[in-house]
Image 1: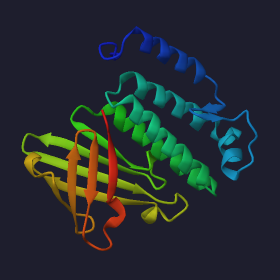
Image 2: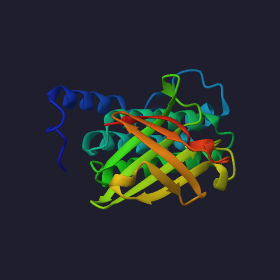
Image 3: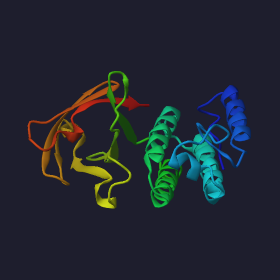
Image 4: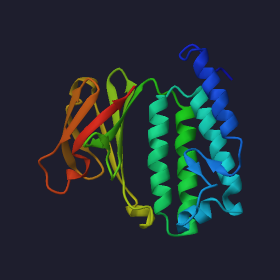
Length: 217
């Protein structure tokens, strides 16, 4: 296993070791302290013995992603924050279990695939991650082909087919400005501006992906 010491100086390795120590507790998830008052249904369930192994496994996967993934570190933390917020919305144990599985899949994706050919964008509103988060990914498949994937997060307590709204489009690198979403037959204008992406549409019913996105690099 090769650590990313070429991209991150020695102080980052020290930080990683510190994180590893913090993650060693089976009762703590990243940014989630089970030692505090557990008032909500989700908090009680997440901190119960039933999810001890799931928390520990997720801690390990997060640490591995931090150490070896070439995805932006800020992206790992911000998507984890989004996940924690969704986890807290759960009203059933099955919802919590599903969210743990989904986050493990995300972390495996960041770890196993080359992220250097992918641009990640999160939707922002008023300088913060949108209350209804959206994650867009622009993949450079070949020199002539680009794949654009999007996922708009909705209530995790909804039915499986309505917890998220997908976007999928294929285009050429020099035609990324005009996007056609194959999932919902929606046309979007993508305006790439250095670290910002502005998405617009004139079609009614397609507004869910409109907005301002921040690039993670």
